[in-house]
Each structure stands twice: as C-alpha cells, then as structure tokens.
Image (cartoon, rainbow over all chains, first blue to last red; front, side):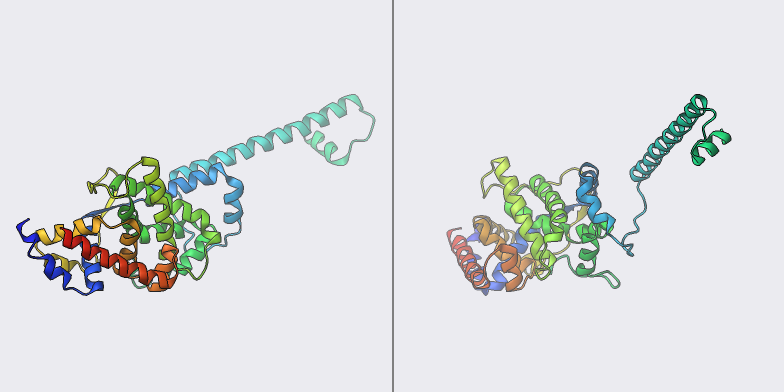
Length: 126
Length: 193
C-alpha cells in the first residue's frame, strides 16, 4: 500500500474516458464468473405459463412457426402432453358412454317409437 | 458493446425479440444467454453482492419477458435490460436491508457458472500496480450508485449517449453532466486515498 501516494498522480493524468474505463474495468474484473441464469429463468417462465395460461397462451397461440421455435422438447413438457392426451381420452370415453347409455334407456322405455337416427345407429352397433 | 458481438449467422437482437414477442421461448432463451453477463454486471454494481446480483439477474429476465409487448422498438435491448436490471437490483437491495455501498464479496455461488469475458480497458488496468488497482477500486466503490452506473453504461458497455440516457432514464444532456460529475468525484476520491 506504499504505492498509493505515488500512483494516484499518474492515474489522475489520464483523460476522463480512460480513467472511467480503467476504473470500471478494475472493479468488474473481480468477477471471474457469471452465473448461467438461463435455465432458472426459462423454468420460471414455463411455470408462469402453467399458472397463468390465459396470459401466456394468448401470446403463444398467435406465434407462427419460426426457425427459433424448434427447441427439443424437454421431458417435463412431453409428460405434460401425454397427461393432456390421457385426460382428453377419458373425457371422450365418458361422453361416448353417456350417449350409449342414453340410447339404451330410450330403446328400453320406448321400443316402438322411432329413435333419432344417430342414436338408432349407435344402439344397433352396440 | 459488451456481450453483443455476434458470431456469423447469429440472429440479430431485433429478430429474436420479435420471435420472443410472439411467444417463442427458445428465442428468449438465446437472448438471456446473450445478455446475462452485462445484466449480472449491472446488478452487481448496484447491490455489490454476488448472490443478490444473481437473483436480480434472474428476475430481470423474467420481468423483461413479461414486459416484451410493451417494449419500445427504438430503445435497444441492452439499454432496456440495464434499466430493468438497475430497478430489480435496487428492489433486491431494499428487501435485503443492505446499505448502498457495502463490501463486495465476489465469491462464486453454487449453480451453473460461465467464465467471465474480458472487459474494455483491462490491459491498461493490468499495467497498474496492485496498490494502484486497489486505490482505484476503492475510489470507484465510494461513488454513488448513479455515478457507478453512468460510468459503466458509457465505458464498460459502450452505450452511446442516447442509449445511456434510455438505460438510466435521463435526458442525453443529463448523461453528460452525470458522467462528468462522476469522473470528477472519482478523481476526488482518489485524492482522498
């Protein structure tokens, strides 16, 4: 620290822009590492998309396919897609079951009346 | 500008911003990777703490993504991110209750990290003795936050006067005034060393 009295004079001789550049460089060069925040940021944005689908889907739904929209699907998003497909399949099965059940009830209670054509076909098929 | 030198074939900021505005998350991830270092540096200059700077950097990019539809087209991405980063970092500092000019621990935190890239003026700085570097760093540390940010905006990130004005929410004339005052105060702090 003996040099402190000797060297500030030399530093003060630098023009403003050089002094400012050197000063901020000395300070920032202490940062040897930069944290890679991208995974955490993208995870947070994905979670927001799940929590607030209305806000998110409005933007994503209007997005055309671009060269940048081709990230490899992560395991998490693939699982989500499979889950959605499963839920859709269950709902579809319930609807079909209800229709068949209604058609069966109608046939049993009014055997002589003509059924609506779609129910008739379904009942026959069943 | 720091962190904005593009490799051949790399899409421009404007292209990626447009894609991200349409909901392209991959485009936003590329921008995060492109600008996380300058944003982290800004945050660190404000909060002077590695862990807090990392949190502020994360929240800057999350907040910026949400705000993309409202981003003014003519502002430029880096000045806009610097503005958000400064705001997020102040918020982090307020929540932590830390003073403005505290010690600056630079220990590496847990989690993925990338080696820092070089900074302009570093070769000149390396020509100084360790004592000179320490004196200069101490003088810089004793500057106010606004002074540190205007010096960083102009001399570290290489922003033009108008870009710095947008980043710091000042008029162009005030940028010059703030910068001149900051360097004058830096010289004064060095004399006090």
